[in-house]
Image (cartoon, rainbow over all chains, first blue to last red; front, side, top):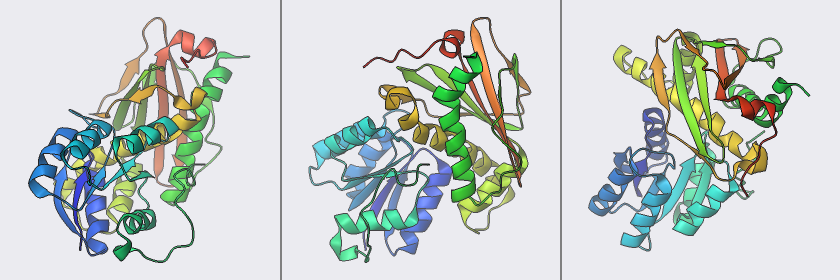
Length: 136
Length: 173
Protein backbone atom coordinates (compact mmCIF):
# COMPACT_ATOMS: atom_id res chain seq x y z
CA UNK A 1 0.00 0.00 0.00
CA UNK A 2 1.30 3.42 -0.97
CA UNK A 3 1.00 6.54 1.17
CA UNK A 4 -0.12 9.35 -1.11
CA UNK A 5 -0.11 13.13 -0.63
CA UNK A 6 -2.83 14.81 -2.73
CA UNK A 7 -2.22 18.46 -3.68
CA UNK A 8 -4.99 20.46 -5.36
CA UNK A 9 -6.78 23.71 -4.50
CA UNK A 10 -10.08 22.27 -5.75
CA UNK A 11 -12.28 20.62 -3.13
CA UNK A 12 -14.04 18.42 -5.69
CA UNK A 13 -10.72 17.16 -7.08
CA UNK A 14 -9.38 16.38 -3.60
CA UNK A 15 -12.55 14.38 -2.93
CA UNK A 16 -12.39 12.66 -6.31
CA UNK A 17 -8.74 11.68 -5.97
CA UNK A 18 -9.29 10.46 -2.41
CA UNK A 19 -12.06 8.18 -3.66
CA UNK A 20 -9.84 6.74 -6.43
CA UNK A 21 -6.81 6.30 -4.15
CA UNK A 22 -8.86 4.46 -1.50
CA UNK A 23 -10.60 2.35 -4.14
CA UNK A 24 -7.22 1.17 -5.44
CA UNK A 25 -6.15 0.12 -1.95
CA UNK A 26 -3.74 2.96 -1.21
CA UNK A 27 -3.75 5.47 1.63
CA UNK A 28 -4.17 9.26 1.54
CA UNK A 29 -1.77 10.74 4.12
CA UNK A 30 -2.75 14.38 3.65
CA UNK A 31 -4.84 16.68 1.45
CA UNK A 32 -2.98 19.92 0.65
CA UNK A 33 -4.57 22.86 -1.14
CA UNK A 34 -1.51 24.94 -2.00
CA UNK A 35 2.10 24.51 -3.06
CA UNK A 36 3.37 25.87 0.26
CA UNK A 37 1.27 23.39 2.22
CA UNK A 38 2.47 20.58 -0.08
CA UNK A 39 6.13 21.30 0.63
CA UNK A 40 5.51 21.52 4.41
CA UNK A 41 3.49 18.32 4.49
CA UNK A 42 5.92 16.42 2.27
CA UNK A 43 8.57 16.87 4.95
CA UNK A 44 6.19 15.81 7.74
CA UNK A 45 4.42 12.92 6.00
CA UNK A 46 7.24 11.58 3.79
CA UNK A 47 4.73 10.07 1.31
CA UNK A 48 5.58 7.43 -1.30
CA UNK A 49 3.82 9.45 -4.00
CA UNK A 50 2.48 12.99 -4.57
CA UNK A 51 -0.27 14.02 -6.98
CA UNK A 52 0.27 17.69 -7.80
CA UNK A 53 -1.94 20.34 -9.45
CA UNK A 54 -0.24 23.29 -11.21
CA UNK A 55 -2.44 26.39 -10.86
CA UNK A 56 -2.75 27.05 -7.13
CA UNK A 57 -2.56 30.04 -4.80
CA UNK A 58 0.58 30.85 -2.75
CA UNK A 59 2.95 28.62 -4.73
CA UNK A 60 2.18 26.88 -8.02
CA UNK A 61 2.70 23.17 -8.56
CA UNK A 62 5.86 23.49 -10.67
CA UNK A 63 7.59 25.50 -7.92
CA UNK A 64 6.35 23.06 -5.30
CA UNK A 65 7.84 20.16 -7.28
CA UNK A 66 11.20 21.98 -7.40
CA UNK A 67 11.13 22.51 -3.63
CA UNK A 68 10.16 18.91 -2.91
CA UNK A 69 12.81 17.49 -5.23
CA UNK A 70 15.39 19.76 -3.56
CA UNK A 71 14.42 18.17 -0.23
CA UNK A 72 14.20 14.62 -1.59
CA UNK A 73 15.72 13.86 -4.98
CA UNK A 74 13.90 10.51 -5.04
CA UNK A 75 10.45 12.10 -4.64
CA UNK A 76 7.80 10.51 -6.86
CA UNK A 77 5.41 13.12 -8.20
CA UNK A 78 2.62 12.90 -10.80
CA UNK A 79 1.23 16.18 -12.11
CA UNK A 80 -2.58 16.15 -12.48
CA UNK A 81 -3.56 19.37 -14.14
CA UNK A 82 -5.79 20.99 -16.72
CA UNK A 83 -2.82 22.64 -18.50
CA UNK A 84 -2.53 21.21 -22.00
CA UNK A 85 0.49 23.24 -23.10
CA UNK A 86 3.55 21.27 -24.21
CA UNK A 87 5.81 23.81 -22.50
CA UNK A 88 4.09 23.10 -19.17
CA UNK A 89 4.68 19.35 -19.59
CA UNK A 90 8.37 20.02 -20.28
CA UNK A 91 8.67 22.37 -17.28
CA UNK A 92 7.04 19.82 -14.98
CA UNK A 93 9.27 16.95 -16.13
CA UNK A 94 12.39 19.13 -15.97
CA UNK A 95 11.43 20.12 -12.43
CA UNK A 96 11.36 16.48 -11.39
CA UNK A 97 7.80 15.22 -11.97
CA UNK A 98 7.63 11.60 -13.17
CA UNK A 99 4.25 11.79 -14.91
CA UNK A 100 1.75 14.27 -16.31
CA UNK A 101 -1.97 13.60 -16.52
CA UNK A 102 -4.56 15.93 -17.96
CA UNK A 103 -7.80 16.70 -16.15
CA UNK A 104 -10.54 15.61 -16.16
CA UNK A 105 -9.14 12.78 -14.07
CA UNK A 106 -9.22 9.42 -15.77
CA UNK A 107 -9.13 6.72 -13.12
CA UNK A 108 -7.53 4.10 -15.39
CA UNK A 109 -4.77 6.46 -16.48
CA UNK A 110 -3.98 7.37 -12.89
CA UNK A 111 -3.74 3.71 -11.90
CA UNK A 112 -1.58 3.07 -14.98
CA UNK A 113 0.73 5.97 -14.06
CA UNK A 114 1.12 4.68 -10.51
CA UNK A 115 1.99 1.27 -11.97
CA UNK A 116 4.70 2.81 -14.17
CA UNK A 117 6.36 4.41 -11.16
CA UNK A 118 5.78 1.47 -8.82
CA UNK A 119 5.84 -1.68 -11.02
CA UNK A 120 4.72 -3.83 -8.08
CA UNK A 121 1.34 -2.08 -8.34
CA UNK A 122 1.12 -2.24 -12.14
CA UNK A 123 -1.97 -3.65 -13.78
CA UNK A 124 -1.82 -5.07 -17.28
CA UNK A 125 -2.41 -2.42 -19.94
CA UNK A 126 -1.85 -2.34 -23.65
CA UNK A 127 -1.19 1.29 -24.59
CA UNK A 128 1.17 3.98 -23.45
CA UNK A 129 -0.38 7.03 -21.84
CA UNK A 130 -0.98 9.82 -24.30
CA UNK A 131 -1.68 13.04 -22.48
CA UNK A 132 -3.48 14.52 -25.50
CA UNK A 133 -5.59 11.54 -26.45
CA UNK A 134 -8.68 12.79 -24.67
CA UNK A 135 -8.54 16.32 -26.02
CA UNK A 136 -10.86 16.72 -29.02
CA UNK B 1 -13.42 39.18 -42.14
CA UNK B 2 -15.68 40.11 -39.23
CA UNK B 3 -14.59 40.80 -35.67
CA UNK B 4 -16.59 37.82 -34.50
CA UNK B 5 -14.84 35.55 -36.97
CA UNK B 6 -11.36 36.36 -35.63
CA UNK B 7 -12.50 36.02 -32.06
CA UNK B 8 -14.23 32.74 -32.87
CA UNK B 9 -11.29 31.23 -34.70
CA UNK B 10 -8.61 32.03 -32.18
CA UNK B 11 -10.15 31.55 -28.78
CA UNK B 12 -13.83 30.68 -28.67
CA UNK B 13 -13.81 27.84 -31.18
CA UNK B 14 -11.32 25.67 -29.26
CA UNK B 15 -13.05 26.56 -25.99
CA UNK B 16 -16.49 25.62 -27.26
CA UNK B 17 -15.22 22.46 -28.88
CA UNK B 18 -13.49 21.36 -25.67
CA UNK B 19 -16.51 22.24 -23.52
CA UNK B 20 -18.88 20.23 -25.70
CA UNK B 21 -16.52 17.23 -25.75
CA UNK B 22 -16.16 17.38 -21.98
CA UNK B 23 -19.89 17.59 -21.36
CA UNK B 24 -20.76 14.81 -23.79
CA UNK B 25 -17.81 12.42 -23.58
CA UNK B 26 -16.78 12.77 -19.94
CA UNK B 27 -20.07 13.65 -18.26
CA UNK B 28 -22.59 11.96 -20.58
CA UNK B 29 -24.77 15.06 -20.96
CA UNK B 30 -26.73 15.62 -24.18
CA UNK B 31 -26.41 18.83 -26.17
CA UNK B 32 -29.61 20.43 -27.38
CA UNK B 33 -29.66 22.51 -30.55
CA UNK B 34 -26.76 23.96 -32.49
CA UNK B 35 -24.82 25.39 -29.50
CA UNK B 36 -22.28 27.28 -31.54
CA UNK B 37 -23.65 30.78 -32.06
CA UNK B 38 -21.18 33.44 -30.92
CA UNK B 39 -22.32 36.98 -30.30
CA UNK B 40 -20.74 40.13 -28.88
CA UNK B 41 -23.09 41.83 -26.37
CA UNK B 42 -22.48 45.08 -24.50
CA UNK B 43 -23.34 43.42 -21.23
CA UNK B 44 -22.99 39.90 -19.84
CA UNK B 45 -26.16 38.51 -18.35
CA UNK B 46 -24.96 36.06 -15.75
CA UNK B 47 -26.61 32.90 -14.58
CA UNK B 48 -26.79 31.81 -10.93
CA UNK B 49 -23.11 30.95 -10.47
CA UNK B 50 -20.12 32.20 -12.45
CA UNK B 51 -16.49 31.17 -12.36
CA UNK B 52 -13.94 33.69 -13.60
CA UNK B 53 -10.39 32.94 -14.73
CA UNK B 54 -7.86 35.41 -16.09
CA UNK B 55 -4.98 34.71 -18.43
CA UNK B 56 -1.72 36.60 -18.40
CA UNK B 57 1.68 36.44 -20.07
CA UNK B 58 1.22 36.49 -23.84
CA UNK B 59 -2.59 36.70 -23.71
CA UNK B 60 -4.69 38.96 -21.48
CA UNK B 61 -8.30 37.86 -21.37
CA UNK B 62 -10.88 37.22 -18.67
CA UNK B 63 -13.01 34.12 -19.05
CA UNK B 64 -16.36 33.98 -17.30
CA UNK B 65 -18.12 30.63 -17.34
CA UNK B 66 -21.66 30.99 -16.07
CA UNK B 67 -23.94 28.12 -15.04
CA UNK B 68 -27.58 27.49 -14.33
CA UNK B 69 -28.18 25.61 -11.08
CA UNK B 70 -29.55 22.53 -12.80
CA UNK B 71 -26.41 21.73 -14.81
CA UNK B 72 -24.15 22.33 -11.80
CA UNK B 73 -26.24 20.07 -9.59
CA UNK B 74 -25.98 17.29 -12.17
CA UNK B 75 -22.22 17.78 -12.53
CA UNK B 76 -21.73 17.61 -8.73
CA UNK B 77 -23.60 14.28 -8.68
CA UNK B 78 -21.41 12.96 -11.52
CA UNK B 79 -18.19 14.10 -9.81
CA UNK B 80 -19.27 12.54 -6.50
CA UNK B 81 -20.02 9.23 -8.20
CA UNK B 82 -23.11 8.45 -6.15
CA UNK B 83 -21.63 9.40 -2.76
CA UNK B 84 -24.12 10.91 -0.30
CA UNK B 85 -23.68 14.68 0.18
CA UNK B 86 -25.33 16.84 2.84
CA UNK B 87 -27.12 20.05 1.80
CA UNK B 88 -24.47 22.47 3.12
CA UNK B 89 -21.62 20.61 1.47
CA UNK B 90 -23.59 20.36 -1.77
CA UNK B 91 -23.55 24.17 -2.13
CA UNK B 92 -19.79 24.26 -1.50
CA UNK B 93 -19.26 21.50 -4.04
CA UNK B 94 -21.29 23.38 -6.65
CA UNK B 95 -18.82 26.28 -6.42
CA UNK B 96 -15.89 23.90 -6.58
CA UNK B 97 -17.28 22.09 -9.63
CA UNK B 98 -18.01 25.41 -11.37
CA UNK B 99 -14.38 26.43 -10.91
CA UNK B 100 -13.02 23.03 -11.86
CA UNK B 101 -14.99 22.84 -15.11
CA UNK B 102 -13.88 26.36 -16.08
CA UNK B 103 -10.30 25.55 -15.19
CA UNK B 104 -10.38 22.30 -17.16
CA UNK B 105 -11.85 23.69 -20.37
CA UNK B 106 -9.52 26.70 -20.39
CA UNK B 107 -6.44 24.72 -19.36
CA UNK B 108 -7.12 21.97 -21.91
CA UNK B 109 -7.76 24.52 -24.66
CA UNK B 110 -4.52 26.46 -24.19
CA UNK B 111 -2.67 24.00 -26.44
CA UNK B 112 -5.13 24.89 -29.22
CA UNK B 113 -4.87 28.67 -28.84
CA UNK B 114 -2.60 30.59 -31.23
CA UNK B 115 1.06 29.66 -30.87
CA UNK B 116 -0.06 26.60 -28.85
CA UNK B 117 -0.68 28.85 -25.88
CA UNK B 118 3.04 29.35 -25.30
CA UNK B 119 3.72 31.84 -22.52
CA UNK B 120 0.08 32.01 -21.45
CA UNK B 121 -0.49 31.74 -17.71
CA UNK B 122 -3.83 31.24 -15.97
CA UNK B 123 -5.00 32.42 -12.57
CA UNK B 124 -6.83 30.26 -10.02
CA UNK B 125 -10.60 30.63 -10.52
CA UNK B 126 -12.81 33.08 -8.62
CA UNK B 127 -16.47 32.17 -8.14
CA UNK B 128 -19.26 34.72 -7.94
CA UNK B 129 -22.84 33.96 -7.05
CA UNK B 130 -26.07 35.85 -7.54
CA UNK B 131 -24.44 38.53 -9.72
CA UNK B 132 -26.83 39.72 -12.42
CA UNK B 133 -24.55 41.18 -15.04
CA UNK B 134 -21.17 42.60 -16.02
CA UNK B 135 -20.99 45.61 -18.33
CA UNK B 136 -18.09 46.20 -20.65
CA UNK B 137 -15.96 49.30 -20.41
CA UNK B 138 -15.04 51.44 -23.38
CA UNK B 139 -12.20 49.73 -25.21
CA UNK B 140 -13.16 46.26 -24.10
CA UNK B 141 -15.07 43.58 -25.95
CA UNK B 142 -17.26 40.73 -24.80
CA UNK B 143 -17.84 37.59 -26.85
CA UNK B 144 -20.20 34.95 -25.63
CA UNK B 145 -21.75 31.63 -26.56
CA UNK B 146 -24.48 29.62 -24.88
CA UNK B 147 -24.47 25.83 -24.52
CA UNK B 148 -27.79 24.10 -23.91
CA UNK B 149 -27.85 20.58 -22.45
CA UNK B 150 -30.52 18.20 -21.19
CA UNK B 151 -29.61 19.45 -17.69
CA UNK B 152 -29.78 23.20 -18.31
CA UNK B 153 -27.48 25.83 -19.74
CA UNK B 154 -24.03 27.32 -19.34
CA UNK B 155 -22.38 30.23 -21.13
CA UNK B 156 -18.76 30.76 -22.06
CA UNK B 157 -17.77 34.41 -22.11
CA UNK B 158 -14.51 36.12 -23.00
CA UNK B 159 -13.78 39.69 -21.98
CA UNK B 160 -10.72 41.39 -23.37
CA UNK B 161 -9.29 44.48 -25.02
CA UNK B 162 -11.15 45.37 -28.22
CA UNK B 163 -7.90 45.13 -30.18
CA UNK B 164 -7.74 41.39 -29.50
CA UNK B 165 -10.97 40.99 -31.36
CA UNK B 166 -10.24 43.13 -34.40
CA UNK B 167 -6.62 42.26 -35.16
CA UNK B 168 -4.68 39.07 -35.47
CA UNK B 169 -2.88 38.09 -32.29
CA UNK B 170 0.74 39.04 -32.09
CA UNK B 171 2.18 36.44 -29.77
CA UNK B 172 5.70 36.68 -28.39
CA UNK B 173 7.92 33.81 -29.51
